[in-house]
Image (cartoon, rainbow, N blue to C red; front, side):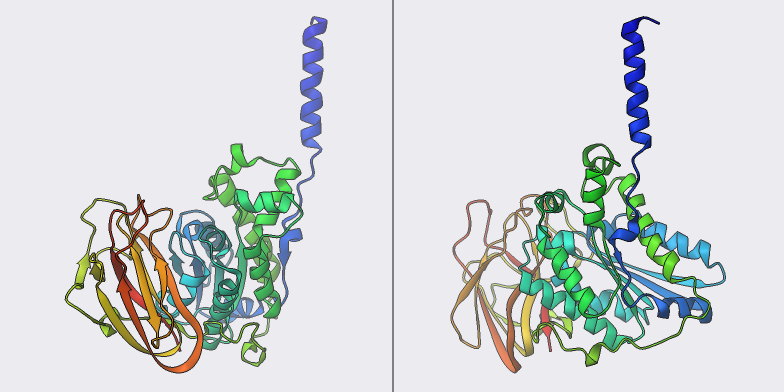
Length: 398
């Protein structure tokens, strides 16, 4: 072997040895067990059927970690019949989750264990910090009111923006809010965004080659599963686990206006003029993409500037779910004939997707009777092709 090739050989050996000496950071560093999962452990030991729900955005919707968790539970506890509720919908964060919780999760029956994630979409969608807290707290308290024995796990998934924020020595707002709610209600949490950031810094893997996207590669999905399994294996293997209520009703709320009774309100409750059409099987005519659950469904639709509607409601928060496509417009609205406000319904994704988009008109209202009045504006931004407003549901908190 020549001297040149000997040096190259030694360099490769040194690199391999250095790589072999990297000690992976344990997932336990990123798990806060807090109140644990004793009720789920009890259910596994004492119930014939155990129900596990997954509530989240596209990272929950896509195949990966939730299927691995489901498989792990079935393989580890073969005598138990598990029921799984897959309630992931791409693009949706905590505000959508709190209003769809009842229909998409709780109406399916008693849930024993709920996995919740919203940190990625809360940040990407620009949901403000106060609304994040109102929504996350609303989910936790609403779920607990439905079943005070339900265990919950709060999870924060990774994206490049969060890694960048952690690299600056800061904590992303959406993760801080997830941890705030988890800590206040003594819930287990897994900070996968911090785990990914630290493990990249520890040179265990790279984002570009291994993780690849905020919708994780199979490598990333496996990493998420291994972290969740670390919590489950530590918490569920207790034959003497006790069943105890989580006393959330006795805990002071962080925000008194949190959406603890969020639900959908049927669009047929609105009064509207002839510029609107109730399309009972809406599909786009522009061949632009859609999301499951928000196509071939009833939609209250108008593409005409000046179209008006009103909605009488009883509660302390009101909003709407729309599909925001290439022709999404601007709406002006008032609550109880107050100051007129406006909201642009066009999003950064509207040019290529009829996106389900959740709009909050008002919260913290006096809990009682109110009236929403809405008019489609004759103004629109340059990017939009029209003035459309397509309402799938109204949002109500009582």
